[in-house]
Figure 1 (spheres, rainbow, N blue to C red):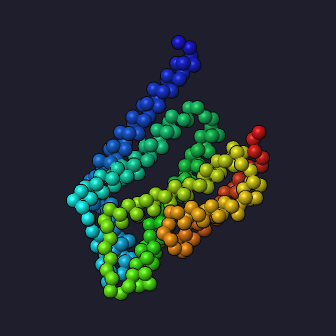
Figure 2 (figure 1 turned 30 degrees about the horizontal axis):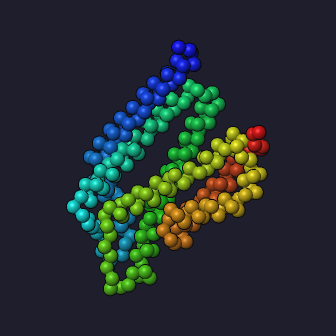
Figure 3 (figure 1 turned 180 degrees about the vertical axis):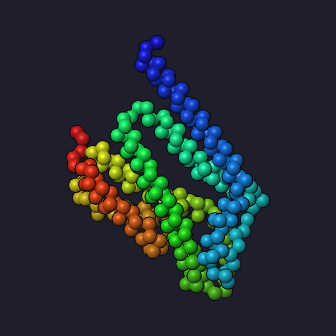
Length: 247
Protein backbone atom coordinates (compact mmCIF):
# COMPACT_ATOMS: atom_id res chain seq x y z
CA UNK A 1 0.00 0.00 0.00
CA UNK A 2 1.40 3.40 -1.03
CA UNK A 3 2.17 6.30 1.34
CA UNK A 4 -0.63 8.36 -0.18
CA UNK A 5 -3.13 5.56 0.47
CA UNK A 6 -1.88 5.27 4.06
CA UNK A 7 -2.25 9.02 4.44
CA UNK A 8 -5.82 8.91 3.19
CA UNK A 9 -6.67 6.07 5.57
CA UNK A 10 -5.08 7.97 8.46
CA UNK A 11 -7.16 11.05 7.61
CA UNK A 12 -10.35 8.97 7.46
CA UNK A 13 -9.57 7.38 10.82
CA UNK A 14 -8.89 10.81 12.31
CA UNK A 15 -12.13 12.16 10.84
CA UNK A 16 -14.10 9.23 12.27
CA UNK A 17 -12.50 9.84 15.66
CA UNK A 18 -13.38 13.54 15.63
CA UNK A 19 -16.96 12.88 14.48
CA UNK A 20 -17.40 10.30 17.25
CA UNK A 21 -16.27 12.84 19.86
CA UNK A 22 -18.55 15.53 18.41
CA UNK A 23 -21.60 13.24 18.51
CA UNK A 24 -20.69 12.19 22.06
CA UNK A 25 -20.43 15.82 23.22
CA UNK A 26 -23.78 16.69 21.61
CA UNK A 27 -25.38 13.68 23.30
CA UNK A 28 -23.96 14.67 26.71
CA UNK A 29 -25.02 18.27 26.12
CA UNK A 30 -28.55 17.14 25.23
CA UNK A 31 -28.78 15.08 28.42
CA UNK A 32 -27.64 18.12 30.41
CA UNK A 33 -30.13 20.24 28.46
CA UNK A 34 -32.89 17.89 29.52
CA UNK A 35 -32.12 18.63 33.18
CA UNK A 36 -31.82 22.42 32.79
CA UNK A 37 -34.80 22.60 30.43
CA UNK A 38 -37.10 24.32 32.96
CA UNK A 39 -34.56 27.09 33.63
CA UNK A 40 -34.03 27.63 29.91
CA UNK A 41 -37.75 27.66 29.08
CA UNK A 42 -38.59 30.04 31.93
CA UNK A 43 -35.96 32.40 30.55
CA UNK A 44 -37.46 32.20 27.03
CA UNK A 45 -40.92 32.97 28.40
CA UNK A 46 -39.76 36.23 30.02
CA UNK A 47 -40.26 38.39 26.87
CA UNK A 48 -43.88 37.21 26.60
CA UNK A 49 -44.54 38.00 30.27
CA UNK A 50 -42.90 41.44 30.16
CA UNK A 51 -43.89 42.69 26.71
CA UNK A 52 -47.48 41.61 26.06
CA UNK A 53 -50.23 43.87 27.37
CA UNK A 54 -51.73 42.45 30.56
CA UNK A 55 -55.33 42.69 29.37
CA UNK A 56 -54.60 40.20 26.57
CA UNK A 57 -53.26 37.52 28.91
CA UNK A 58 -49.64 36.38 29.01
CA UNK A 59 -49.99 32.62 29.39
CA UNK A 60 -48.73 30.19 26.77
CA UNK A 61 -51.07 27.26 26.11
CA UNK A 62 -50.35 23.64 25.17
CA UNK A 63 -52.84 22.42 22.58
CA UNK A 64 -52.06 18.70 22.36
CA UNK A 65 -51.15 15.83 24.69
CA UNK A 66 -47.64 15.32 23.29
CA UNK A 67 -46.73 18.96 22.69
CA UNK A 68 -44.92 19.37 26.01
CA UNK A 69 -42.85 16.19 25.50
CA UNK A 70 -41.92 17.01 21.89
CA UNK A 71 -40.98 20.57 22.82
CA UNK A 72 -38.78 19.38 25.69
CA UNK A 73 -37.05 16.83 23.47
CA UNK A 74 -36.33 19.35 20.67
CA UNK A 75 -35.23 22.14 23.00
CA UNK A 76 -32.94 19.77 24.94
CA UNK A 77 -31.25 18.81 21.67
CA UNK A 78 -30.78 22.49 20.75
CA UNK A 79 -29.33 23.21 24.21
CA UNK A 80 -27.01 20.24 23.71
CA UNK A 81 -25.76 21.67 20.43
CA UNK A 82 -25.00 25.03 22.04
CA UNK A 83 -23.33 23.46 25.06
CA UNK A 84 -21.22 21.19 22.84
CA UNK A 85 -20.20 24.00 20.44
CA UNK A 86 -16.80 24.67 22.11
CA UNK A 87 -15.95 20.96 21.89
CA UNK A 88 -17.21 20.83 18.29
CA UNK A 89 -14.98 23.76 17.32
CA UNK A 90 -12.04 22.20 19.17
CA UNK A 91 -12.30 18.88 17.31
CA UNK A 92 -12.76 20.60 13.95
CA UNK A 93 -9.61 22.63 14.59
CA UNK A 94 -7.70 19.53 15.73
CA UNK A 95 -8.61 17.92 12.41
CA UNK A 96 -7.66 20.81 10.10
CA UNK A 97 -4.74 22.44 11.97
CA UNK A 98 -2.09 19.81 11.01
CA UNK A 99 -2.74 20.62 7.33
CA UNK A 100 -2.34 24.41 7.50
CA UNK A 101 0.43 26.88 8.27
CA UNK A 102 0.99 29.13 11.28
CA UNK A 103 -0.39 32.22 9.53
CA UNK A 104 -3.63 30.42 8.62
CA UNK A 105 -3.97 29.12 12.21
CA UNK A 106 -3.69 32.65 13.61
CA UNK A 107 -6.24 33.90 11.05
CA UNK A 108 -8.71 31.13 12.00
CA UNK A 109 -8.36 31.78 15.74
CA UNK A 110 -8.82 35.52 15.21
CA UNK A 111 -11.82 34.81 12.96
CA UNK A 112 -13.37 32.57 15.63
CA UNK A 113 -12.96 35.31 18.22
CA UNK A 114 -14.73 37.83 15.96
CA UNK A 115 -17.37 35.22 15.10
CA UNK A 116 -18.19 34.66 18.80
CA UNK A 117 -18.29 38.42 19.35
CA UNK A 118 -20.72 38.91 16.45
CA UNK A 119 -22.87 35.96 17.57
CA UNK A 120 -23.05 37.32 21.11
CA UNK A 121 -23.99 40.77 19.81
CA UNK A 122 -26.74 39.29 17.65
CA UNK A 123 -28.18 37.35 20.62
CA UNK A 124 -28.24 40.49 22.75
CA UNK A 125 -29.83 42.56 19.97
CA UNK A 126 -32.42 39.92 19.10
CA UNK A 127 -33.45 38.58 22.50
CA UNK A 128 -33.21 41.69 24.67
CA UNK A 129 -34.19 44.38 22.16
CA UNK A 130 -35.96 43.10 19.05
CA UNK A 131 -38.20 40.34 20.41
CA UNK A 132 -39.65 42.45 23.29
CA UNK A 133 -40.29 45.30 20.84
CA UNK A 134 -41.92 42.97 18.30
CA UNK A 135 -44.18 41.37 20.93
CA UNK A 136 -45.27 44.78 22.22
CA UNK A 137 -45.79 46.12 18.71
CA UNK A 138 -47.69 43.11 17.33
CA UNK A 139 -50.04 42.89 20.35
CA UNK A 140 -50.74 46.62 20.56
CA UNK A 141 -54.27 48.02 20.41
CA UNK A 142 -53.68 49.04 16.81
CA UNK A 143 -53.70 45.37 15.75
CA UNK A 144 -55.78 43.59 18.40
CA UNK A 145 -59.16 45.20 19.22
CA UNK A 146 -60.01 46.03 22.82
CA UNK A 147 -62.48 43.18 23.39
CA UNK A 148 -60.41 40.47 21.72
CA UNK A 149 -58.22 38.08 23.74
CA UNK A 150 -54.96 36.39 22.78
CA UNK A 151 -54.11 32.67 22.93
CA UNK A 152 -50.45 31.88 22.26
CA UNK A 153 -49.34 28.34 21.49
CA UNK A 154 -46.50 27.20 23.77
CA UNK A 155 -44.42 25.30 21.21
CA UNK A 156 -44.82 27.85 18.40
CA UNK A 157 -43.96 30.76 20.68
CA UNK A 158 -40.84 29.10 22.13
CA UNK A 159 -39.52 28.06 18.72
CA UNK A 160 -40.28 31.49 17.28
CA UNK A 161 -37.81 32.95 19.81
CA UNK A 162 -35.22 30.19 19.30
CA UNK A 163 -35.37 30.34 15.49
CA UNK A 164 -35.22 34.11 15.45
CA UNK A 165 -32.10 34.10 17.64
CA UNK A 166 -30.40 31.32 15.63
CA UNK A 167 -31.16 32.96 12.26
CA UNK A 168 -29.81 36.23 13.62
CA UNK A 169 -26.59 34.54 14.81
CA UNK A 170 -26.09 32.92 11.40
CA UNK A 171 -26.81 36.16 9.54
CA UNK A 172 -24.27 38.08 11.61
CA UNK A 173 -21.53 35.69 10.41
CA UNK A 174 -21.79 37.30 6.95
CA UNK A 175 -18.89 39.75 7.59
CA UNK A 176 -16.58 36.83 8.54
CA UNK A 177 -17.26 35.04 5.25
CA UNK A 178 -16.80 38.29 3.36
CA UNK A 179 -13.47 38.98 5.09
CA UNK A 180 -12.26 35.48 4.23
CA UNK A 181 -13.13 36.12 0.58
CA UNK A 182 -11.16 39.37 0.66
CA UNK A 183 -8.20 37.84 2.53
CA UNK A 184 -7.84 35.07 -0.06
CA UNK A 185 -8.48 37.49 -2.96
CA UNK A 186 -11.61 35.64 -4.04
CA UNK A 187 -13.29 39.04 -4.36
CA UNK A 188 -11.94 42.59 -4.51
CA UNK A 189 -12.83 45.68 -2.51
CA UNK A 190 -13.55 47.48 -5.76
CA UNK A 191 -16.09 44.82 -6.80
CA UNK A 192 -17.85 44.98 -3.43
CA UNK A 193 -18.08 48.77 -3.46
CA UNK A 194 -19.30 48.74 -7.05
CA UNK A 195 -22.06 46.26 -6.19
CA UNK A 196 -22.75 47.66 -2.71
CA UNK A 197 -26.26 48.89 -3.62
CA UNK A 198 -27.27 45.35 -4.63
CA UNK A 199 -25.69 43.92 -1.46
CA UNK A 200 -27.60 46.47 0.65
CA UNK A 201 -30.86 45.50 -1.08
CA UNK A 202 -30.01 41.83 -0.42
CA UNK A 203 -29.43 42.59 3.27
CA UNK A 204 -32.84 44.28 3.49
CA UNK A 205 -34.48 41.29 1.77
CA UNK A 206 -32.73 38.85 4.12
CA UNK A 207 -33.75 40.95 7.14
CA UNK A 208 -37.35 40.92 5.92
CA UNK A 209 -37.27 37.12 5.68
CA UNK A 210 -36.02 36.51 9.23
CA UNK A 211 -38.04 39.23 10.99
CA UNK A 212 -41.78 39.85 11.35
CA UNK A 213 -43.39 42.16 8.76
CA UNK A 214 -42.63 45.45 10.48
CA UNK A 215 -40.11 47.98 9.21
CA UNK A 216 -38.53 48.79 12.57
CA UNK A 217 -37.35 45.23 13.33
CA UNK A 218 -36.07 44.89 9.75
CA UNK A 219 -34.02 48.06 10.20
CA UNK A 220 -32.69 46.78 13.54
CA UNK A 221 -31.17 43.78 11.73
CA UNK A 222 -30.24 45.35 8.39
CA UNK A 223 -28.54 48.56 9.60
CA UNK A 224 -25.91 46.75 11.77
CA UNK A 225 -25.24 44.35 8.88
CA UNK A 226 -24.78 47.23 6.42
CA UNK A 227 -22.43 48.93 8.87
CA UNK A 228 -20.46 45.68 9.32
CA UNK A 229 -20.25 45.32 5.53
CA UNK A 230 -18.40 48.63 5.15
CA UNK A 231 -16.28 47.98 8.27
CA UNK A 232 -15.23 44.66 6.70
CA UNK A 233 -14.07 46.46 3.56
CA UNK A 234 -12.19 49.02 5.70
CA UNK A 235 -10.40 46.26 7.65
CA UNK A 236 -9.46 44.56 4.37
CA UNK A 237 -8.01 47.85 3.13
CA UNK A 238 -5.92 48.23 6.30
CA UNK A 239 -4.40 44.75 5.75
CA UNK A 240 -4.12 45.13 1.97
CA UNK A 241 -6.61 42.36 1.25
CA UNK A 242 -8.86 42.23 -1.80
CA UNK A 243 -6.70 44.28 -4.16
CA UNK A 244 -7.16 41.88 -7.05
CA UNK A 245 -8.74 38.49 -7.61
CA UNK A 246 -6.71 35.35 -8.14
CA UNK A 247 -6.56 34.12 -11.74
